Length: 115
Image 1 (cartoon, rainbow, N blue to C red):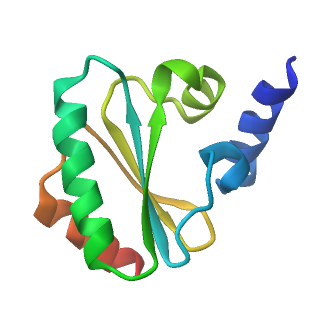
Image 2 (image 1 turned 60 degrees about the vertical axis):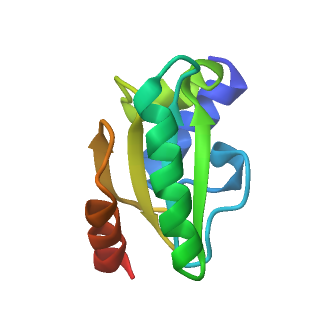
Image 3 (image 1 turned 135 degrees about the horizontal axis):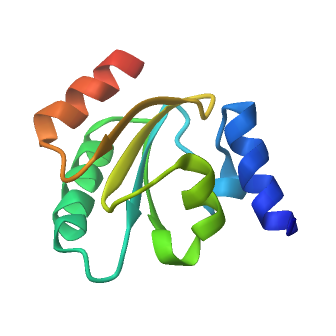
């Protein structure tokens, strides 16, 4: 098995996602991780919503991942459609997951449950 597939699988088994899997440092308190694809119209709106929420809350990062360029991670996490949003706590554990464009109020509520 290729090394990057093993790394993605290990992250899922370990139950935590960090900079190696996400492509950048996660937020200190929480992360809003968005899997997107190039021609996904709801992904654009989701990007705006998550970026706005991340700007409002100190220590929260919005991390967008191109699903097509990160297939090992997509497969390891069972992402089946874009946008898919994961809410990670400060330790990188997935605490919430949603497919489709979220409502801003739902994202804020999911963060509230984590923080």
